[in-house]
Image 1 (cartoon, helix red, strand yellow):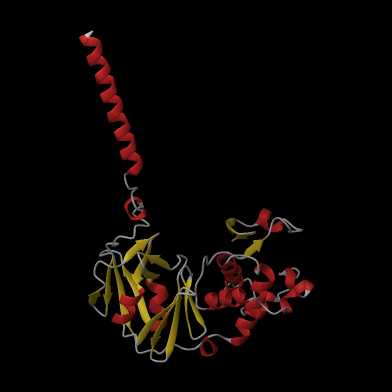
Image 2 (cartoon, one colour):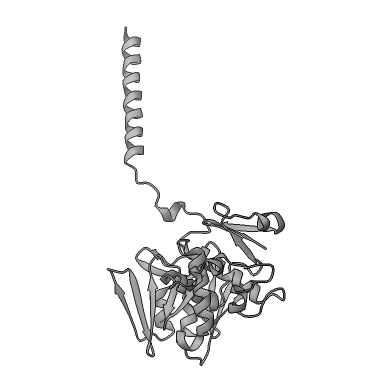
Length: 293
């Protein structure tokens, strides 16, 4: 009888302990995103050192996310002499002013803009624990700061210049912008920005190839072997381009390239010819378009 009572008490004790463990597991706080994130996307310090004109800056504040070095916007802007920094909560955009230049940085955006120009990064601008972090190349550009990389020391090397940022009207060739934005819009207005940039890259890669005319206009209206672009044949090339297409064209004219090798693209869902897919090496797909070398 005594043995039975002890056995019963032991079972009750075990059950109580089991319930307590289960309750603890349910109420214990979950690990934060910071604690479980990969090394690639960790919001912790990157281990990358940042040097401006030979002096280390932002010690321990940079972030390395998907192989892109990020810097905190406010701290970086203050170091390079910004006059003021403000924030619009309604548009989630920071405005940095320096020497008459307004620099716009939007949380979640893929570019920094200033004087009508657009400086792109394939990795978007991030809000990390209430601080805006920007890819270093994108934010250095409007300040006319050159960016280099020392792989041996894992260091970003920034060099100030005496240059003043040129406005869009000064920097872009108006004819090139006019036609490039129109072909991008006519071919890919509904695509994501990256896809629109890739279409622009195809045009510029052809311009730089000895196989095609050496101007943007010449490439678009090239009829060697037949009309090269459908919008030229059906007239949609003359429509007013979308805002995103103009931005994509400007990003291309800033020198950003997803690939220097792509020379063709097609939408396999609506294409009436499969010559490209049968005769050219496939590169990648973005949205509805397949790109070929």
